[in-house]
Length: 182
Image (cartoon, rainbow, N blue to C red; front, side, top):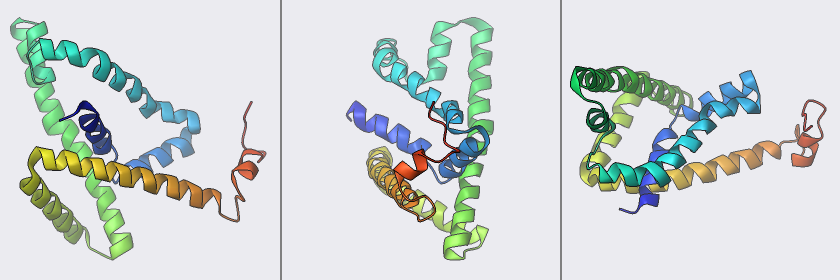
């Protein structure tokens, strides 16, 4: 698969049902500059894609955990590999999946009138079916189309919000006394 498709899939994976709420809260709390909390990942992501990926391939490892064990040796490396496997697999991923499920439950309840259990069964069922049928290639291709849809929806929502009578266009928004451009 081409690198750009894999990269889009990685980006699409980070853009889930909870992302708009997270970014809105960051901006509301810290202003637009608060976005650097997640914009910083762009810099490390680009380094990974354009510099480290070639080096990684030469080392003939498939996962970051294998890389750590190749780079570091002994009991410390084995402990680090086990700790990261547990932390990322059993703690971090569970928290991420829970936040995405909670956002989905809120959306399913507000838009479709579904109970939390109904929302989870339907969304998990759809995910299991298309993941099983398409495999990894199908998931990556689905991510590509979901990314395009998410970007189009984001720009459409921004246009609609700026067009509201309360805002009266981008020029009026930028000239508002609460907006500081200096």
